[in-house]
Image (cartoon, rainbow, N blue to C red; front, side, top):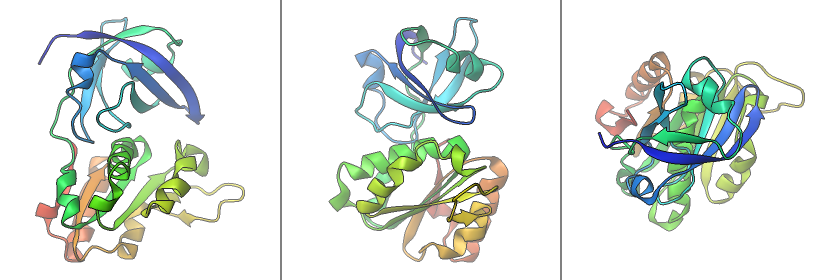
Length: 226
């Protein structure tokens, strides 16, 4: 793994209960390594601890964007930083999602919580060359409507025929959308000629993969970013 580089915090907005949208301006040598949605890199904070974070922005863009939940450890230190603070970042890692396969198949995206952040990167990538891709449908599961950290972007995605259905575990005032787990909505997705990109907790990924298999989508057409 390459050495650490210095990056500057250019955005830190609270976009939901304990959810932050952060941006880091990174050196060109780091940004050039971000070539596929679903990649991630490690961020090191002042305490000396580091942790991996997936990119929510599209490859080829700088600053890098992330959606991070307040918690103990590195995430907590990172979300507490003021604008202009510096951290150290590693080089992008992982193969990411094979978006080229979505040109030959329809695409199903399924993620939960901040795990949908790398799938947002997929959507932004496809949006840049929408005519090259086929149908795109997805499910995004969160705790409450307030946890839809970039829910305001969904209408624009839908206008570009990137159809993402949010579902909440606990409903809220005025909510008229789906209630329940993403697994409950698998049967609503067109999967006959699809590949699927999944991101979320292990139990959800296993359950969704099994359910997609029962609907005829083989495991070799289901992809994770890690």
